[in-house]
Length: 263
Ligand code: PGA
Image (cartoon, rainbow, N blue to C red; front, side):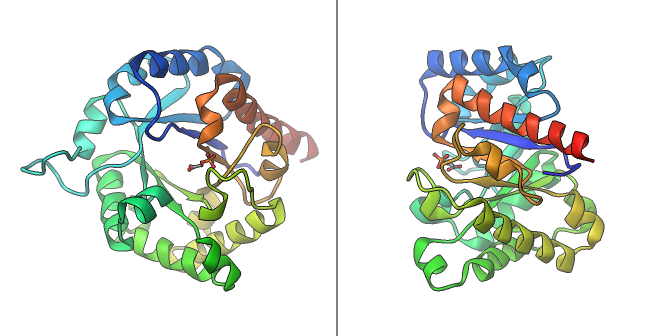
């Protein structure tokens, strides 16, 4: 963790009915002060965007969506545009989550189009990248991340990515209880930051938040957030429980506090 403001996102995936979503949002909002100095975002199912955004109004918690269409309005049955998400109160979107890439089948190019559409519409966008187990075993982690990063940011100039964050999420660690070691995660984050430097410049590389995702829990958050290039987390399973999510947010808050004491 460094001087970058930490970002902790809860990816609710396709969980929660309306009452549960409202209760979860109310729980997180009521404890926001424990996560002071941390940017907290709940990435909610589309249908609860208005509810969660309304509950979060006036708090430091933001509401995000888990995907957006790469297109504007039109005859695209079932799709949700960036303008709709914004109008419903979302300020953030995820793009390229591994479940969209590997379960739904989104290509690197489509993820790039979605990232561009989110950022250009005025949303903050968290672009997710990460390797499959076989890619890690083949030693191609950095290559995969580089490819997804390049395609994800295709055509975006440095002025267009001020609202961008990156989530590094090794696919084998998502929902499996298997977390990357802090050292392995740090190595991947460092390589992603180096790639941003190569693609843009030093200022972009040092200001862009890169968060880790994949079985982050209250018990392992602090050691991950202590790493120099890990700027917070994208939390799946543990974000569905207020206590767990807030204690992960608190770990991010404490990592910053320690940093400022330690200089
Ligand atoms: P997990 O999910 O924390 O349940 O592993 C992370 C994610 O998919 O963003």
